[in-house]
Image (tube, rainbow, N blue to C red):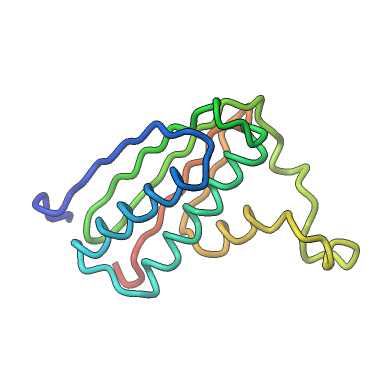
Length: 141
């Protein structure tokens, strides 16, 4: 059961720009700190959110600062969820090459979704592929 005093819902509409992503990440970290989230859980959520936002900026919106990213971050002391929506055409997550395959080991990009899936409890890419939903449940909860 969640503690209503610690429930939160934040939304942002940001430009596809690194400084905008950093602003969101700082606010997310502050939210988690207010809920007494430990360093390990905070790292998992921050890294996953950063990867998702970077993918939206670079791949979804093609690095165009005129294109927007919608972000929703909700949660409480036990769990949190993020939704990231870009203005791109989307993609098929099954078409992303496996970064652990030998031919991809030296490729500098392509690990974001794998990292997100490794750290988050639930991850869904919603068709047409420009909406990422992810949830983290604190261990033992």
